[in-house]
Amino acid sequence: MLKLDLPIQKNPLKSREDLIGAVQQILSPLKPYYSEGRALLEIGQTGTSYPDPIAGMEGFSRVLWGLVPLLAAGKESDIWDICLQGIKNGTNPSHEEYWGEISDFDQRAVEMAAFGYALALIPEKIWQPLTEQEKENLFAWLNQINQVSVYDCNWLFFPILVNLGFKSVGLPYDRKKMERNLDRIEQFYLEEGWYADGPVAHCDYYGPFAIHFYSLLYVKLMGEEDPVRAQRYKSRAEAFAKDFMYWFAEDGSALPYGRSLSYRFSQAAFWSALLYAEVEPFPPGVIKGIILRHLRWWFKQPIFDSNGLLTIGYRYPSLVMAENYNSPGSPYWALKTFLLLALPEDSPFWKTEEKPLPSLKAKAVQQSPRFIICRQNTKSHIVAFNAGYQHTNEHSHVAAKYEKFAYSNFFGFSVQKAEWGLAQGAFDSMLAVSEGDNIYRAKRKCEEYEVNGNVVYTKWKPWMDVEIKTWLVAGVPWHIRVHRIETSRGLDCADGGFALGLEHKEYKGQTAEVILNGQEGLVKFPWGASGIKSLYGNGQAELVYPNANTNLMNTRTVIPTVKASVKPGTHWLINIVFGELGSENIVNSWDAVPKIEIVNGEIIISEGSEKIVIQTDELNPLPVL
Image 1 (cartoon, rainbow, N blue to C red):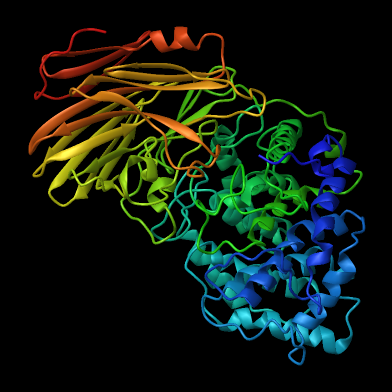
Image 2 (image 1 turned 180 degrees about the vertical axis):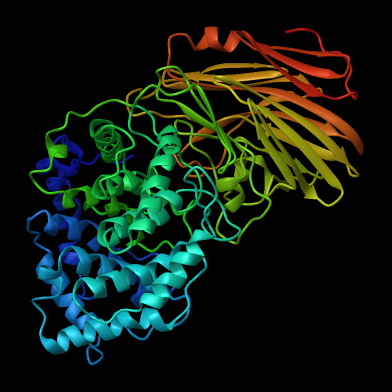
């Protein structure tokens, strides 16, 4: 992979000045890519679901999420004059780069939110310098958002932010629309601070980096005028923070899960919004540590191109995992995390000592996202065991992003590249089934689920006449999968373990240690190991080498997999899956298998003082391991 030497990669990210420098280092490379009229930011050739001019307008607006708090901090940017000229031209109906008339469910409604943000935080920079005609143009263009419909999800906040911007500069604003949208968003609330991203939707990063982020902006801007709602938002954010902290590792990385992961370090935007709204569920030093370690982790990854531009992808550039709505400028939504720069220079926060994560439980049940999250001792390894959802949607790779059995911050997850076989399917942390034609199906949604203690249960149907019940016994480095397959057709089954990267920048040319012995397979490198064992069902271990660029974390991977074939009828498969970060004790961990036995129709799993029982009267006894 190309080795870059960019200023952002050398930034220590410790002080306020370092963070200011980071924004400038991210924004400065954009200067040559503004259009002649300055209203479009054109930084790539890849396409998206909306036309190129709208993609250019999107790129232009997303830069504001970092530029606005930078200017609010009293600092300058060498692109602000460009942006101000772009705003004048983009909102001028007579200019060739006019951003145009918007319609229902228009991408430009999303991008208008950044202008409401700017009007509220830096009116002296974006509003006061305009002539009366330019002000009229900006207002007229933005006010279109009050005349159109937006999607019934986090998009409801975009008209709210625009109207908050209008209110901040003394313009007429649609208070009734704000109230209607805020009331509708209330119906997305679940419990313990969690929101779904719509009436029937997933719990993912759109909770923290969208709904909570905008709610906390509302707290800051409307706290005195609407104190009851503001207090409600603050209380929910405090509750959510106590769960969301489990999604972050001590090394700064976060859990890759769900869609829109190309927004990368926006994963920490929620924590910046907490600080801005003066909500403190933890000491400020703890929140400071989460944000700074997160940014440091990201800026060590190859997420920039040779010109210093953010790319589409996750840990490296990749269109394979991208959303249909990802344009070249989309990743700059990540700049939302720099909202903390809007804190005053004399805020005590800037002198607060950065602190580590507080003591967290080894296992935490989170009912709203349907997770059991396990943390491995003091290591920076997080695994979320996942039940999935009874609904799906039409976003790209939705099954891979929401329905895998486990999600790891170290191993990441893989997406399907094509439909032929296990290598193209890249079925890590999934049970994939085929009718013998090498076309595999995996879990797309569940019919029922339960998250209880140490076990995640889910029932799913790859075909109408095939029912699979899966029990996941959570744990690290080992976890156990029990599958009951009731089928009217013969099936080839492949239960994939974690996808382990085949290369590491610190271990060039390192060869793997491999165990492949009938029912067990293990691949071990100095940076980590992945393995799987078949305990019941006559499965055979195999190493699957998926197509390149299918995994979010590593360009090339291997997936230890247990394969088995079953005839029509009812069958049980029990596999035990291993995933470990680099350690001298990987081999010892591999040998320390939890005790599993089948007695009187019960599957009994014992590890230390813990005992888990899965009831069934269909299995023959299994020898104690």
